Image: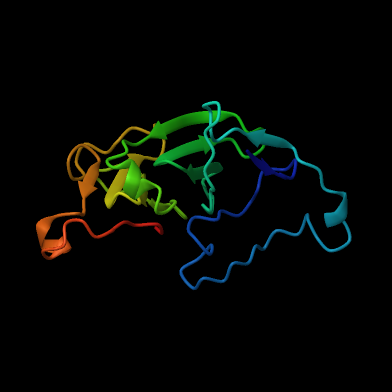
Length: 174
């Protein structure tokens, strides 16, 4: 379960990538929360990541926020788009798991946002412990059909694995 404290006002600043900006500042310009009121904060809502009974996995993913939408990545190969003020689910995406053994070796730690171009709408991009790279539509959560094989690229090719097909190769950061 993820609990987030959200100011009642719409957040004016996005956090579009791991560490917030290309310089990795990890600093928010927001002023509503400060040293004098942080101890009074309470959870505004929560989001249940693991929906199956008995299923537990450590999630170390850093959410991103772009254009007023909060994107959360979590095990195993899942992403959700949420309204940051209410926690309302806009969409959920579940990628396939190639190999349970490899998937247990790591956890997705971050997502990336790509603003799109003339042919492709904005995308959420993430890698998996299975060695796959996904691109999904930031508005709908549907895989990008023009990216790899219907939204996913298998990075465990013979060229990359260089003769070692059984060695672990996966991505855990955006």
